[in-house]
Image 1 (cartoon, helix red, strand yellow):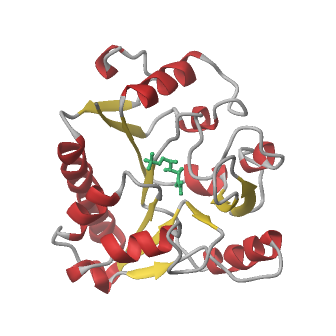
Image 2 (cartoon, rainbow, N blue to C red; image 1 turned 180 degrees about the vertical axis):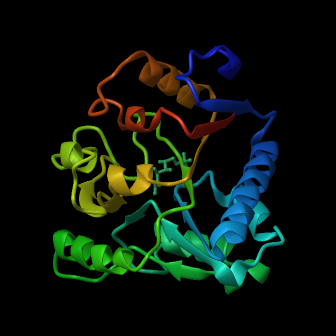
Length: 237
Ligand SMILES: O=C(O)C(O)[C@@H](O)[C@H](O)[C@H](O)COP(=O)(O)O
C-alpha cells in the first residue's frame, strides 16, 4: 500500500518522503514555516512535540531553522513518568536534540512532575499547562498499536482522554511498554492545535494507519481521533 493510495478524509494531507532523513528535513521545514506564521500573526508561537526514538533527526533539523526562537514555547504531547536525565525521558530527548544552538533560546514547559502518585503528577502538569497558550503546531507520532501521544488502547482513562468534553488537559496513562507510567495531553488540548502533523515511518505504521482509516472506534486505535482536517501526515519507508 502506498500512502498516495490511502482513502484520506477530506482536508487530510499526506506526504511521502524517500527516507527518514528526507522526512526529518521536510517536517522541520514545515514546522518552521508554521511557527513563522504564528510568530507573524501573534508574536509568539507554541510548539508541542512527541517523544519516542524517531524524532531525533527531526529535532536536529528543526534546531537549525532560523526562527525567533526566544518567542517560541516548546512542550510535549506526552511524557514518561521518569525524572530528567533518565534514558526514557522525553524532556531529556528534547533538551538534548531540539533545544540546542539558537533553539536553546526557546522556553520549555515540561510535563514531568515529582509526586507521590501519577495522578498527583498529572494534576501538577495540568497547572503548568494552564499558563501555556493554545498550541500553534503539534507534531504527533504513532505506535504500531495505533497509540499516539500516550493515549494507549486498553487504558482505563482512554475514553475520558479522547472525549471532546474532557475537562483535563493532562491525564495519567499506563503504557503496555516500559516505562508504564505516562502523562498524556488529552484530545481537546491536542486537537485544538492550529497545525497538526503526524510523522510515521515504515510499512508497519502505514498498515496501522490504513486500518485506522478503515474503522471508526478510537478506543481500539486512538490515532483515529486525529484523522481529520487539518492533519498533515508525513511518511517514509
Ligand atoms: O513518548 C512517546 O513514546 C510518544 O510520544 C509516542 O506516542 C511516540 O510518538 C510513538 O510511540 C512513536 O514513537 P516512534 O516514532 O519513536 O516509533
